[in-house]
Amino acid sequence: MTNFTYQIPTKIIFGKDEHKNTGKIISEFGIKKVLLHYGSGSIKRNGCYDDVVNSLKEYNIEYTELSGVEPNPKVSLVRKGVEICKKEGIQLILAVGGGSVIDSAKAIGFSALCDNDPWDYFEGIAKPSRAIPVGVVLTLSASGSEMSSSCVITNDELGLKRGCGTELNRPLFSILNPELTYTVDKYQTACGIVDIMMHTLERYMTNIGSASPTDDIAAAIVKSTMKNGVKALENPNDYEARAALMWNGTLSHNGLTGLGRDYFMISHQIEHEISGMYDRISHGAGLAIVFPAWCKWAYKYDIPRFLAFAKDIMEVEDKATDEETILFAIDKLIAFFKSIGMPTSLADADIADESKFEEMAEKCTRYGKRVLGGYINYGVKEIVEILNIAK
Image 1 (cartoon, rainbow, N blue to C red):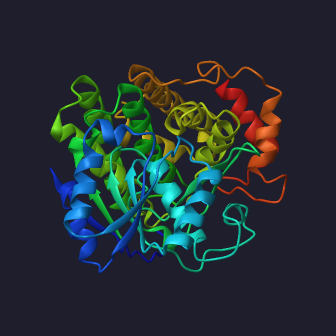
Image 2: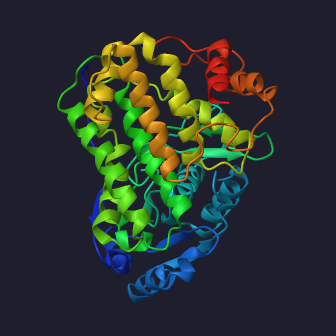
């Protein structure tokens, strides 16, 4: 187990109807003016918008709205949010939605107090030094952005998807009411299941050796997500299943499941290039394609760790050889993804142009300027090999 420092400043308010206390919670921080940030309007259809706005009005909190966040949130909308914050003197950005809305809010927050273009932070040209705080009302169990230090934004003009990690990204508070996820459709629920699993497994699958109890926590989260994910797909209004997914999503990406491990989320990095180039691909769906392909490529570098994955997480009994045990576990994972309606190959996602593989790999390595770590240092050759397995 490696050394670590762990501190999470985000206040979590979890349970039924808690989003109706949004105004009260904000007022306790002495905040009087917020940017209400959300997506295409689903929060208006399910009643969440009215509940939140009524609560803001009850506590005399002024708000300016910015809607229109899309899946794979765009830097163009971030720029609009920055203008609003500077003009209106916004004190907090209230993200009402899922990971895309939260990430857009984070990007606005650390870009609004500077003169740099927001994209500079995602290209590494500048580093955030301060930020307008973000508050969250979560409506989708998936990204874990409600408690994480990460933020991912797409530049639609360049066809690039990039991340910016900083402790400034940790939300001030996050309100988690599982009831708000009842109306999430089966496809997006399934994408969320995959995202939660991958945030955990990409931390688990590293060559540190054993890191108990972190590994035990990670295994429990993955298995709970699989079990309760199936229940939520079968009965969207199953509160306990939705609650488990929501809390698993938060725990999977707040750093807890990586404590004592050095990790580099290579499947996430590769997937960012897929959904950056093919904007119609949801992040979770892209991960369902990439991660099993990466496993088939990488298992030979760490047989003990992949055996732990096979036995402790996928609950596979020993086969004739260690390799057979591992490959059986990977196939079992693929079968699970298929069972919840996820694509498991690039062909499933209607991506057939192999000429794009090298372009994606070049972008992933920043044209040779970035070292992608892990079991080995990944270059263009290795990423193309993984994409070929995924096809």
